Length: 395
Image (cartoon, rainbow, N blue to C red; front, side):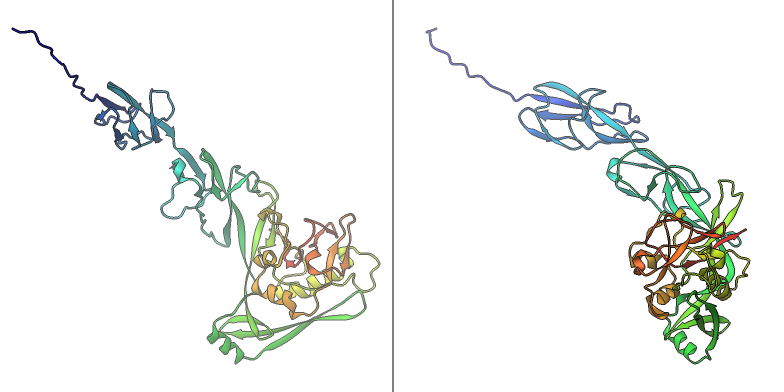
């Protein structure tokens, strides 16, 4: 055979490689392998592994590794040939435990909930607690400490993925048989009916320290068994007074009642006529509270009544603007505050360093609430609050 040259041409075949998926402790399910081609992109299969109490975060290159590929990621050249195994990376769900202390959650919520990171921020539900007899409950919030005094950190929304054990804190409410004008009537048909009823006018008198007579005048209408107080052209329905039950200790050894809302407003003079000291027993404040406010509320003079506008247990002792004051006031109290009794630039002010009170000519935003304590005026919180609450009734 004659000699001749031979030219050989290389023929290349693109490598393929196998991608395997390891559940890394997941339930007994399998995921099919994927065959990938070198230098070509491929989308990883969607994870189908499940591990109870855990959230899938992605894929690692070994059993204890960190995430290098997220679910369904488009990848290229994970290997040159052969095979590569990807291992599922798991993270424990955040466990949210809610101790309801006798309350109930809205439908669809559970006392123990497991959340993925993507579920945050998570807004906590608002539970309710049934009324038993004359005792009801107001939800103060979820706290990380179980205390009737609401100590610890309050949570309304969980922003950081983590485990939480929270406690529903409640304040007990007492629904009294005593009534006071509170809610404004807005039903036009009822207003028309009230306008057609006779108005009964009554009054109470209290002498001020300026030797002048202060007269409190009420205009009451009764219709279909209900009483209404008329202020200007508006009517306010007499409704049961709701009290907070404030315990002396965790065992409720002694309970003091404080009305839930600011019920009324009134300007006060310094001290009762003829008195030589500023102590509560001789004050015009006491005279007003017992001779006027108590009568209107249907209370006995033996009940301890005083000024009180913010209960420390609710964690909002400061009222620096009208919106916050109104939130604690009944419709009637707001109407009175707005000028139904004339000038409100003079209010009782408690001196921060001595146990006596004085008349203050500063405007309303600087008025301070007072409360009786051992026969004197005592201060519960500083500055910026005013109004009338019933306080100190022990049960």
